[in-house]
Image (cartoon, rainbow, N blue to C red; front, side):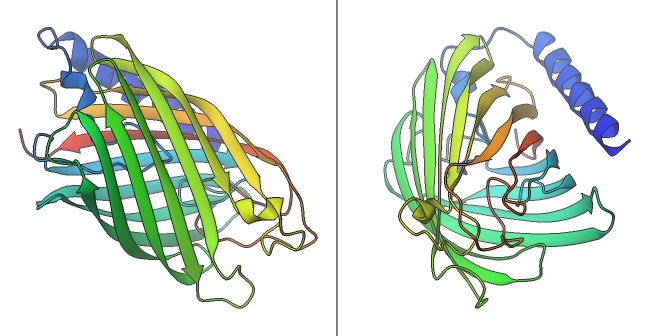
Length: 279
């Protein structure tokens, strides 16, 4: 039942966004590159040329998966993303998860990212560094730093993150490393499509006793629809979550960008609809 409701919600959101796009005038070249959040697994910075404040709703469904985007069940997330000026971006979210096995848990996260290279215009290269804190679904607190990189052109975009996290738990790694990268190409007007990949606990490639089960990877298709004169935009991505390496240590419920449930492979699907508070 939960799975069917989630799939129906995705179809409804996509249909609504497509209908909005069809009622708007032709998109100017390059306008659709100004997406609020084009990639689902990489956080991008905003510029003064983009909508400055946005409220986003994200829903995800996972099987044998866990993380900020969802776990073994349905995750409902509300987030706020805003441009603070001086090349600073604020991103904060709160999650409510409904597990397939029963039970409801929550998680929160907040961070501020500053572009140190680029960031004054929507097009071109941007490189930033951010700091943040979170509380995951297992009630474990952590602090983290995120390095962001992006390049936006008229007909394509590239973005990625490297996230270094320190959890306040003896059962967790000293420092967790999460990497992500995404590429999208313009298919038609405001419609972009491409691919995203995520790596979690990559230290498992060289640490046989990696504390959270081993190195895990996700790769899957990615789409973004962001009509120029609409307040709404839509993003979708999903794919298999699989272990590239394994260790004998059981996994935890740490916030991640791919799932990790007791050394089992799984999958996840994540969809977001963003609403621009300012024209």
